[in-house]
Length: 283
Ligand code: HEM
Ligand code: HEM
Image (cartoon, rainbow, N blue to C red):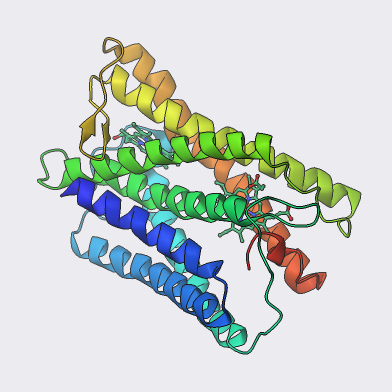
C-alpha cells in the first residue's frame, strides 16, 4: 500500500511537470490547473489530519523544535492554499497566451531546456512534499496502525530525490546551465547563486542524513517495495547527531534558502517586471 502511495505521488509529480512544460497552450493551462488541485489536496489532507486529534496530542516530544510542528503544518497549509488559488488565477491568464517558449532537450545560453525543467519541477514537487509528510510522521504516536506507512512513503520519496539530484548533476555536466539572467543586479546574482548551491547541498545531504539516522536506529529503509540493507550497526549516540542534522539543522536551513529562492522568483516576476525570467525554467 505504501509503495502504491509513493508511486502515485511520483506519477502526479511527473504528469504535472510534463503538462506544465507541454507544447500547447491548452496542455500548459491544464497542467497549471492540476498543480492548483494538488495544492488544494494538500490543504484537504491537513484538515483530515486535524480530525485524527494527533496535532493536539502528538508523540512525546524529544527535541526543542517539536513544539513548533503544529505551527509549521499550519504555515504549509496556508502556503498551499495561497499557491493553489494563485495557480488557478495563473491558469486563467495562461488560456489566452500565444507566445509559447519553444523547447529543446538541451539547455541554451538564455534558458533551461526540457530535461533540466523536468528535473527541476519533479524534484521540487517531491522535495516539498517530504516536509509535511516527515513532520507529521514524527508526531504520530507509536503503535498507530498506519504510522509505518508514513515512514515508508517518506523514505521512498527521499531516496528518489537523491537519485534525481544525482541524474541532474550528471545532466548539467553534459548540458551546461545557462548563466543567470543579465537583468539581475550583482547582489541578486550572488544571492541566487548561494540559494542554488545551497539547495543542491540540501537535496544531497537530507537523504543521506535521513538514511544514516534510520540505519543507526536499526530501522530498514524502503525504496518502493525494495528494502535497503542495514549498512552498519545501531548506535544511540550516532542517532542524536544525524537526527539533529536531519530534523533541525538542514530543514531550517532549507526554510531560509527556499524563502530566498521563492521571494527572488516572485520579486523578479511581479516587482521588477521581468516575466521572461520565470520562463527560463517554467513554460
Ligand atoms: C515552487 C517553487 C519554486 C519556484 C517558483 C522556483 C523557481 C525557480 C526559477 C525561476 C529558477 C531559475 C533561476 C534562473 O533564472 O536561473 C529556479 C532554479 C533552480 N531551482 Fe527552483 N523553484 C522552486 C522550487 C525549488 C525547490 C523546492 C528546489 C530545491 C529543492 C529548487 C532548486 C532550484 C535550483 C537548484 C535551481 C538552479 C537551476 C538548476 O540547477 O536546475 N527550486 N527555480
Ligand atoms: C530530500 C529528502 C528528505 C527530506 C527533505 C526530509 C525531511 C524530513 C523532515 C522535515 C522530517 C521531520 C523532522 C522533524 O520535524 O522531526 C523528517 C523526518 C524523518 N526522515 Fe526525512 N527527509 C528526507 C529524506 C529521508 C530519507 C531518504 C530517509 C531515510 C531513508 C528519511 C528518514 C526520516 C525519518 C526516519 C524521519 C523521522 C524521524 C523520527 O521519527 O524522529 N528522510 N524528514
